[in-house]
Image 1 (cartoon, rainbow, N blue to C red):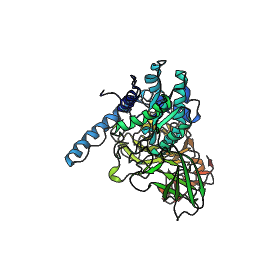
Image 2 (image 1 turned 90 degrees about the vertical axis):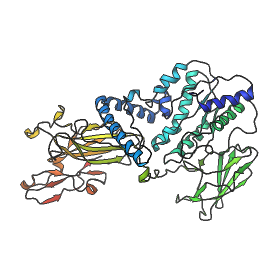
Image 3 (image 1 turned 90 degrees about the horizontal axis):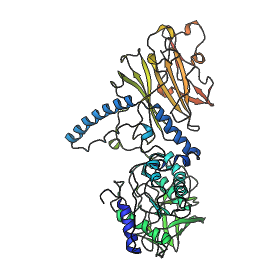
Image 4 (image 1 turned 180 degrees about the horizontal axis):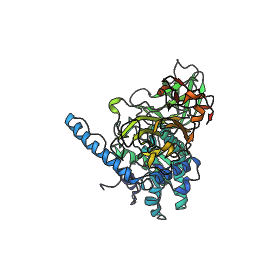
Length: 539
């Protein structure tokens, strides 16, 4: 039993004890994976947001360079080994081992990969139902968390269609964990997915470990799944098979009254007065609330919020809520609003997992310089940097390298070239411009449009010419460079010289829907002046 799912074991044991009938289980699982990997590609491409994810993976696969990725990994591995020794000598916990690079198309999180390898081969084996325990991977970014509301119902529908029947389907709502991520949104998606017929959910926010994503109390998780199956699938009438679920709410006289389903044998507060209720007015400022039980309802209020508009309960990664029903099953976290929350606060300095993104001496790069980083509206982190190949000097063969992270900066793609690829690139239209043997691509600046998600990228060539590119696919690909030097020239014969970005704080800006170039012009005689803003590079 050592390699089998403990939750599945306790689930089946409880069914056996109650039904006195042998119960067979098939364990098809892979820890820490994305729900997209468990759903067929045919089903996902029918939903625009999920189709875009599939296309991004395919683009990353096409851009993957195995030799460069291997060299980068070996360098990171050597650095990691050194840091492990240093950590042990200092009595500190060792850093996390770097992840070995794989071809994106073979990655366990690639859309449909685990469906193809671990679910499809089971068809058309006869099964009675499905229990599902997954979701942690999808809490890392807001984009992933919000997509879960579409992905879970889709997975249920996809598997039911493949088996040709409305399989009973129950899942585990993510347990409590003290981590700065978007776990509450994934829990909410699981709650909303109960609108799909013949589905159930085990609420586990009271049995997790604050500092461990894998609750030790597997028996409680399996038992709560079994309660649903016994009552709804095997028709064993139980006192209750689910914790309280919010049904409706109304606002009257400065109070919000929430009515619950599954308030079997009444609602109760476990271990003291009700806690972890929040209330807010139109200003969206959350205040701790007083909550009292009245039959199947909870009345929530705070005198500092005389005109409330929304209530939340246990809306945190590691909540402290204590609302249960009469048989002791916990209530699901919920909210009555749909407001977009600020991103989770960054961890303290001593909690940050440090990663070497660009390391001189690898991949033929002598030195990396002038790093930059931006975050797109989808939560993708783009890190870029000058890559000086021939020397550390300001002149020579210099490129721009970029790395992407779609999991909040935990892991990054291998470095890839953007802008011109220098003298080695036969496709560089300016390879031999001016008779120079080497091309210096320098001073990159990236700007993200928060409304459209477009990424605007600007850089200089040989300190003389300015170029602009744009990405509409979250930084996977960029348009061909457009030269904008002419738009930035100062009239008059004395204007010859070189272009450079001014101070980073003033390097670029959006003004009146036009993009301002991050360039200045060094005039002859050493006198400088900034170029005019807003030269109509329309987004």
